[in-house]
Image (cartoon, rainbow, N blue to C red; front, side, top):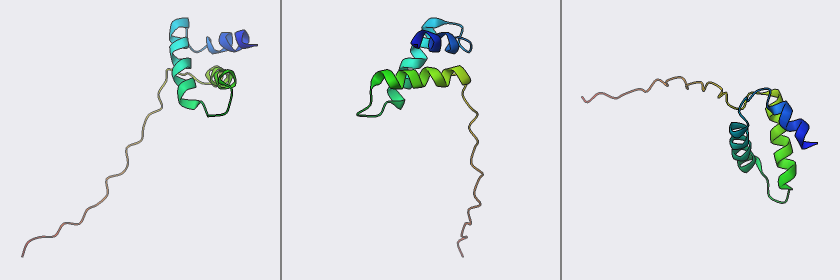
Length: 73
């Protein structure tokens, strides 16, 4: 049931309003055409049970590539 998914997701998000906002944004981004919106919402809530949706993973900066420059003669 969806209520079980919501209560499981609340283990990572303490504020219900914030959970609704995060779930709606994630559902919009993950929804695929020709699938039920309810299934996408349930999938998002399942993901929120295992990970913290408010935590953003650190982005690794790409290594600076050595650029060879020409000198004027």
